[in-house]
Image 1 (cartoon, rainbow, N blue to C red):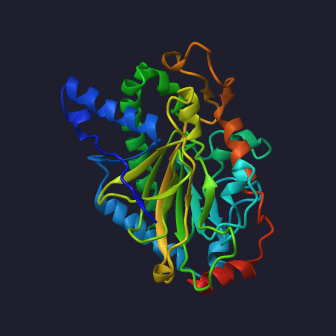
Image 2: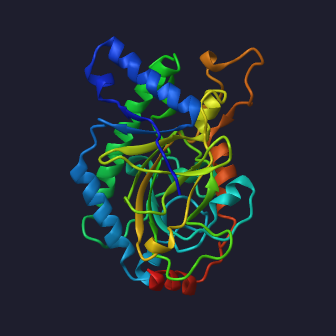
Image 3: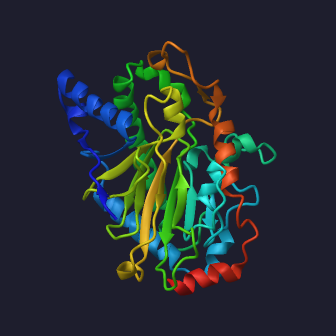
Length: 343
């Protein structure tokens, strides 16, 4: 698998430099988002000790017995909270593509202070505000994950500063669209593959992300994120040491009238030489409020006008997430046990 040399942007000068430095960083981000929608950032200010603790906590959680993890399994409403058992969904369904279930298990949570304010169990449009489901173990897991959420959310706010300059929009435009945001953090383990996958089965099927921007920190082992180029080729993306791989989500692409790309990507299987290795990824889907209106920014409208009608983020989100959850909703605990044993 060939690696894709995505642009690496040091964003620190945007916050510590003059106007020319700010414009230069914004121009680099704009160019990357117009070309592939994927780039990496350094100089982000997120504490590396916190990232290391978060990764250790994720590994310790996934090492728990299946029965213990299932105590905080994702709720019946299929919201992004709690534990996703091994092979319980296929991301390709979000694009209407039928595929075998993805070879992964995961734990998802959202901003703690927003997780109960507007949650109405009978209203799927507030689903991303459902209460978090925290495990009793590992010790300090909840505190570490809340600290991680706060740190990456703050990074998301800094990226909005850059995005506003890149798109020539008043930064205040985003303020009331992210003041009770529905961002989701997702810890993912892709177990070692003792047996070859079935035909068409991947660690994560081809999909686009639904939010504004995704921040990824994955283990430096084979079998990671792959991006589809405009020629249709799949290219593996590497995370630079101490950096984050970032990609544009559907909501931001829609805001820009597709000036910026929400690119199709997947998580491929490792080569035979690396199938005995787990991979853990820390993924953060930075997203607006559930009731934020996604409509074409004035600076992004062309002569033909907006490509898409306005839509709330909740309606957009539900259309994709519920499709992704279509497969394996009735997965049995034996499947999860099998996944643990294969790891």
